[in-house]
Image (spheres, rainbow, N blue to C red):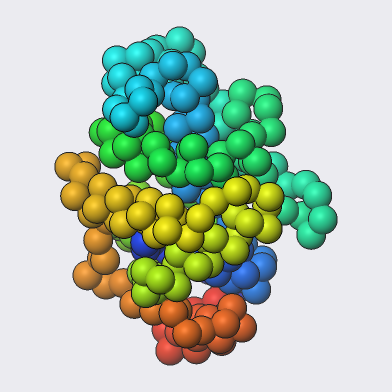
Length: 236
């Protein structure tokens, strides 16, 4: 029987990490965990709780009280809808649509940079992944959450490609946004993610780089299967 493993996928915003992670989880019959959605749910909690000011500054004391001071916050993933799509729930409410807005995109990196937020999310992720057989994507999965993951992949793409993908994704969802706004937001998030004090975004020393600027999702899946064959993992 082939042993189940943990696959950690890190990288910049809008590189298609979630699409890629979902695809390879499907190939292997693994569970996909959208860690970015968990941080977005915390950002929504902060926004609803009045913990974010107009300049995106976060009231850490107030958010800490909401997140860990008043009883456990329930952030979970449920599979529903066409194709068994995973959706994010916050305290029993489906918030999948709300967490994908530009309003949340503008504040999520500020919220995720807080050490106590990262500690909360990391603990939840380790609980979820303890049984292995999971694919997780995020910013510090291979460096902080699961440094012993059997496969680590770091994804990147050219900024203009990432902005175009994000623009098309949000437009398809009915959000009114501009390409320039998205490109600026990605640049800001890149800076915050790579310069935060706790678990900054970086490529793990034993990770494999995947630049998918000019690759289709089919190309990426084949690239992944080739990687499994090279490593003699998961029956390949």
